Image (cartoon, rainbow, N blue to C red):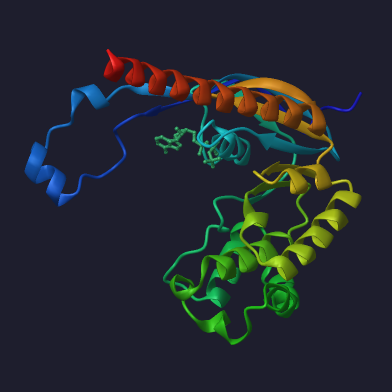
Length: 269
Ligand SMILES: Nc1ncnc2c1ncn2[C@@H]1O[C@H](COP(=O)(O)OP(=O)(O)OP(=O)(O)O)[C@@H](O)[C@H]1O
C-alpha cells in the first residue's frame, strides 16, 4: 500500500495562556509591568492527535471555534512545531492560511506576488508567464500596484488564492478562505479546487461551511477541545459535530430555564 501523504502521530501543541500578547500602556499603568500569575500557565491546544491522509484525499476539519483546527493546519504546513508527537508530510505544501498568503502589508500586490511566489519555489520565468493570469483571476486590476495594506480582506484573499492555486505542489492547505470571497469569486474558486482535486492533489480544508465541506471532502476529522474525536467520512464527522452542538445548546437552554425557575422560587419565598 502507498505511504500516506500526511501522517500525524500523537501530535500535541501547548500555548502559554498569557505570554505572547504585549501589554497596552493602560494595562501597564494599572498592573505595572508584572504578569498576573492567575492568568499564566500553559494549555494544550491539541493533544494526542493521530491520523493518516492518503494521496488524492480531501479532508475537512470540523469543530467549534478555538478547538485547534487552524493550529493543526499550521503544524502540517510546518509553520508551527509540535511539543509532542510528529507530523510527516511527503510532498511540497501550498498553504493558504489565515486569510492571506503571507503577504507583507507594505509591499504592493505585484511585489508580493513575486516575493511570495518565489518563496514557494516559482521561478521568475514562471511568475512572469503567469502574472497576468493571477491578476485576472484575482480581479485586482490597477490596484496590483497599490500596497496590500490598502486592500480589503476580500482583495487579499482573492490575490492569495490566485497565486497559491498556481503552485503545482501536491498538497494544498486551505483555512476558511472560501468564506471571504463574494459569490462570483467563490464559484471560480470552486471550479479551481475541483480541477486541482481531479489532478490527484491532496487537500486539507478548514471550514465552518457544511456546504463547502460536503462539496469537496471525502473525509472529515472532528476536533473537540483539542482532541480528535472522530475520523470518518465527511458526513459522519459533520453528523457527530452537529449532534454535539445540538446537545450543548439543549443543555445550556435547560440550565438557563432551571436558573430562571430558581430565581422565581427565591422571589416567591
Ligand atoms: N500563538 C498562540 N498563542 C497562544 N494561544 C494560541 C495561539 N494560537 C492559537 N492559540 C489558542 O489555541 C486554541 C486553538 O486555536 P485555533 O486557532 O487552532 O482554533 P480554531 O479551531 O481554528 O478556531 P476558529 O474556528 O475560531 O478559527 C485557541 O484557544 C487559541 O486561542
